[in-house]
Length: 527
Ligand code: DCB
Image (tube, rainbow, N blue to C red; front, side):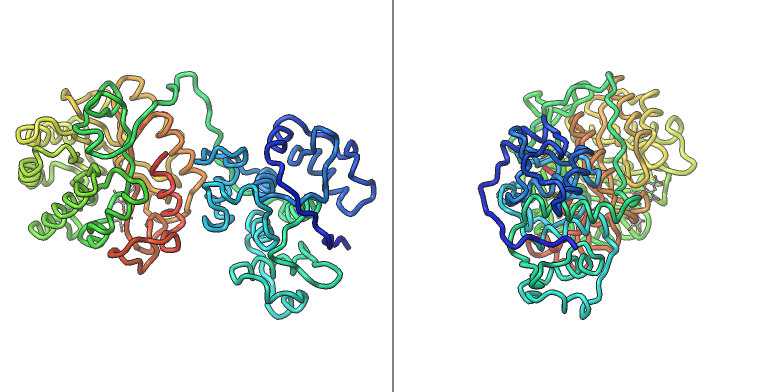
C-alpha cells in the first residue's frame, strides 16, 4: 500500500523555474537522479512524465519531496484531465489552467482567487483532494460513518471538503498515513501529488471532461481588435465605423453586461440596486428585455413602460450604456405590432434624444414564418425612421429571422442607414461554429454585429451550464471586439439565470449568490 510521507519539507515554490521546465523539458523519469527505482512514487512519476503531463528540472532532478504549489497542482491536474488553458486576468504562467479549472467548477473563487495571490503558496491536502475528485470522479461518494472513522484527525477538516475526502477514501484514492491522519491543512509533496493525480486519473479512464472544439485559426480571422471599455462619460455618443462600434473619438469600444429577464416577471432585477451591482462587477451595459407579448408591454403598457424608464434611468445613473429591447418572441413577426412599436419608440426616443447612453433594439427575435425582405426589413425601416426623427444620432440594433441568427440574410439585403448594427443571438449549448462562421462572413463584408443576447445554456434557457463552449464563444467575440449582454439577470430556477433562487435584488451580491453561469459571466465583463 502506498502511503503519504510523514515529513514534508516546506520550501519556496519555484514557479519561475517550473514554468521554464514545463515549457521546455520533459525528461523521462528514468533520467531523474532523485527518483529511486522501486520507490513508492516511481511508477506514477514515470507514467506522467512520459505522457508529458509532468516535468522535472533542468538539472535532471524531480525533487519529489518538495512541497507542491497551488498553481503546480492545478496545472498538472488540468493537463492530466485534458483541460485546455483559457484566457485569464493574471499573468502567472499557470493562470490559463487555473482559470479553466475555476470555470469548470473544480473549486470556488475564495479557495484559489483568479487574481493569483495563492498561486505560489502550497496547496492544502483537503483542497488538493477536492480538485482531483471534481476532475476525475465527480460522482463518487463515501459513507460518512464508515470513512470518517478511518481518519483520526477528521475534526480538523473544513466542512466544505467532507464530501470529497470521504469519497476519496472510499475509492482508495487517499489512504492516510500509518497513524491514520490526513492532515487536511498541511501541504503535500510533488511525489504525493503525482501519485494522487495519477491514481484518480486512472480510475476515471474514459470519463474525461468534454473538450471545447479547438479554435480553428482561419487566415481570414482579423487580428485581435484593440478595444476600450468604460462608460458613457468616457465614450460619449457611439457610432458605427465599418464593422466596429466606436466611441465619439472614433476608437473601437466594447460594451458588456447583463440582459434583464422579462420585466413582467422579473422586473425587480431591473432595479437600480441590481443594475448597480452589475456595474460594480465591471459591466458597462444593461439590456432591458421588455417582452411585448406573454403578458408584457402589450397587456400592461403604462406599468411596463414605467418599469423600462426607471431601468434606463438606473443604468444612466451608473454611467452605463443601456439597450431598450422590444422583446418580440411568441409574436414572431415584428409587423404584428408595428404601430404599438412606433408609438413606444416615439415616446422613448423623444425622452432620451439628448442622452448618448440609450441604444434601441427594435425587434428581439423574429421567428417562425417571417421574412427579412417582406417583414423585418420594412418594419426596421419604419421604426428606424421613427427613432431617427426624434433622436438622429442613436445606435439602432436590428434582429433577423430564426431568433436573430440570420444575419447573413440581412447582410445580403442590408438597411441603408448609418449607425445600424445587426444582432446575433446564441446559446452556447446549442450554437457553435456555424454561427461563428456567419459572424466572420458578414464582418468581412463590413457589417457590424452586436450580440445583444447570449446564454451559457441551451437555446431554451436551461441545460448545461456549457462553460467550455461559452468560453470559446467569448474568446471569439473578444478577438473581434464584439459587444454583448448575457441572458439573464434574474433568480429563476434555470441554468441561464445569473442569480440563485431567492437572491435579493435590493442588496449587493456575494459570490455565493451567483449561479455557476453568473460567476462565469460576471468574471468576463472585462474581457
Ligand atoms: C430567446 C429569447 C428569450 C428566451 C431565451 C432562452 O429565445 F429571446 O426570451 O428566454 O432565448 O430561450 C426564455 C426564458 C424562459 C422563458 C422563455 C419564454 O429563459 O425563462 O420561459 O424565454 O418567455 C430563443 C432563442 C433561440 C432559440 C429559441 C428561443 N433557438 N426560444 O435557437 O431555438 O424558443 O425562446
